[in-house]
Length: 519
Image (tube, rainbow, N blue to C red; front, side, top):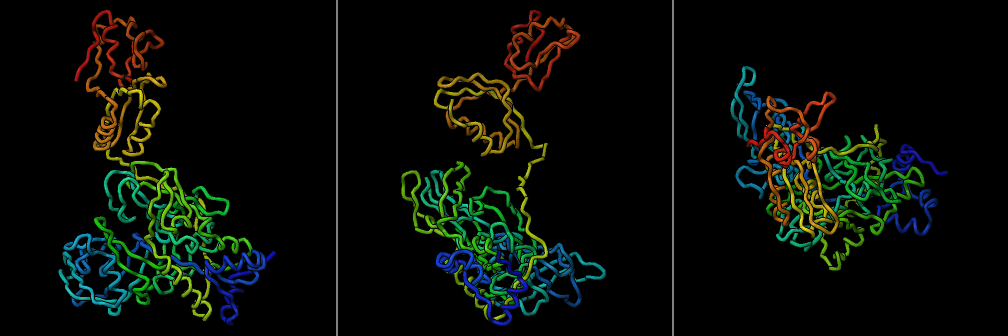
């Protein structure tokens, strides 16, 4: 069985005998020669992607002025940067917006201008201390007159990001571009068979310390990316069927090129940054060679409704998406890329040339990317803003078999606790439930329920019982549908207010008339 080491491949790179091909080229080679022979022939497969990567940014050390300042707030070309690190260190994020130009200019543009070597206006303020007496500074900086300036991107090179569409009746403006109403178009943002993590789906050769092409310079994988989600369902070829792995990357901005780092604006949404990434895959055995031969027709991705209205079952291969249109529910829908396939191909070829010239050696990962990790959602835990209501819903016949409650839960994130139900298939029905969640979410869910024709009644009242006059006869328990009223082991009446539906049946059942309601 064929086995190669990264060290052996690096020796071949050093002496100029390494055979390097791109992720597109390896497909034909393997088809002609078979996996085993191709793995013996080929030493490295290069990949590439060039697309919007919002989770990107740059660390800068400006150096100390005289007298010195401990920057507390600062802007670069009027774009806020984070100064809560040390006296003259800062981080500017790609999606930060200009204080004066809004979404037309932001951190991504500042980063591009820094890569280009242009002067960028620095303004900073501080409260002043004994050792940092200066309170304001205004100057210009560029990549050549600062100390360190390096890109650090917490989440790049998403593994199989879903395509996007819009089910609503209006155009929406998103980080996946402009999405036309009523499924008018579909956009996607993955380089398909060129994409780095799709060529090593289980991260066998990609991990912490992997040397990569980043923005036209050499960089490194520094950690798993934020939202790294490797436990997605995968196809037989190992490729996840939806968004999965990510990587955090870093590299020296001083060596980067604006050909591979570009600021961007998405209409009515905001700023992003196009980043070029290329990762070499060392062919250490036949299995990894087979993974690198994945084709666009074998990579299937999910389709997401970016309005959040629908959960869509449809999925498409990248061959279908790259064709320019797909069949969606009997209609031909236009598809459009957000990432540049031609620039991704260029990156894979540039990386290939670097390796062939001996200018780029491979590195072994010092630690693997995690194979297990699940994404958590942010819980809204501000109980002071939480709302809890009891509501009686009346379902017309057409809604009996529809997933109204699951839609409300997924759309508004509320807790829907069914207290009592009287629903039969193909007939009208009633449901008494308790809705809990953020005040606005509960109100919005009720508005939505009303908008689809399901009538509801809020129970704003509470049941009260005059315990002094109650004789514990138990007549009320006979009609209580939720067991809020029960008899305990001592034959004494107990009332659980949380279970109460406020149906008021107990009021009529009480022979002494000592049960009533209050607001």
